[in-house]
Amino acid sequence: MPRLSEVLSALDALWPPERAESWDAVGTVCGDPGDTVDRVLFAVDPVQEIADEAVRLGAQLIVTHHPLYLRGTTTVAAGTFKGRVVHTLIRHGIALHVAHTNADTADPGVSDALAGALDLRVVGPLVPDPTDPLGRRGLGRICELDHPLPLREFAALAAARLPATAQGVRAAGDPDSLVHTVAVSGGSGDSLFDQVRAAGVDAFLTADLRHHPVSEAVQQSPLGLLDAAHWATEWPWCTQAAAQLDEISDRNGWGLRTHVSRTVTDPWTAHAASTATDHSGAPN
View 1 (cartoon, rainbow, N blue to C red):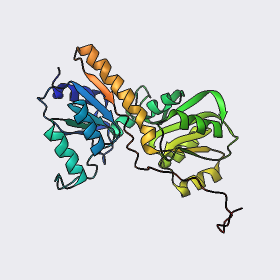
View 2 (view 1 turned 30 degrees about the vertical axis):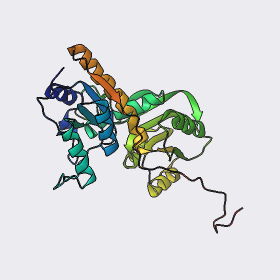
View 3 (view 1 turned 180 degrees about the vertical axis):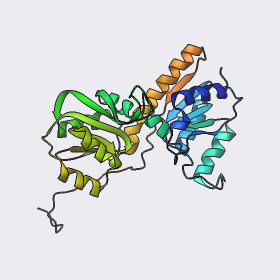
């Protein structure tokens, strides 16, 4: 079995920490570099449910997309929920490693996995990384559909292909407009509207879209917008990342066993559809 230090070096080669945004907190949160690794669990969120799942699996390493301590901390006391995660991991000899914005812009990255889940053909990055001579790294992806679909059908496709969440997938714009090309960005994407418009695509699929940016976007152009749950747009990366580590393990003869968590850690747990009313609240 490989040492943790060897596996971490492989992960840093896939997602170099120096490519993370300056505000980000990526890399190894806890773990003894000299420990051996047999099982690795991939997940989006480093929450208690994922720590408990790793304990049940007998995993020695968790790789998550979201950081545990994004804004720093002064305590890891077990009385706090994040501290309890750390205590659980250390008590059971489990390391935690984070690949966040360095995985977003990688080749392949989070948005490649999102495009793959929808069978979209990737044309290139939405926001290219200027340091990449091949022009393949960057934030988001510009994609093409093999067969154009009305916006409402493309939204239904996304809802069917992405993991089920209480939110599902919302759409803004003309439901009957045809989608030939689409930009995708896993996670929060409403800061990318300028780049999406400049790309000239028919639709944009992302998460965490807010009222005012969406209202302005649909007023300015016929762009179709699709808003999925944040967790759901990033979960496909876990499968992609596990496959990448599997390849490295096979090449080095490590014999690692990788697992992708199916635990839904999206924080939204219920959805109530609106009933038909007029603006006064009285039923139509």
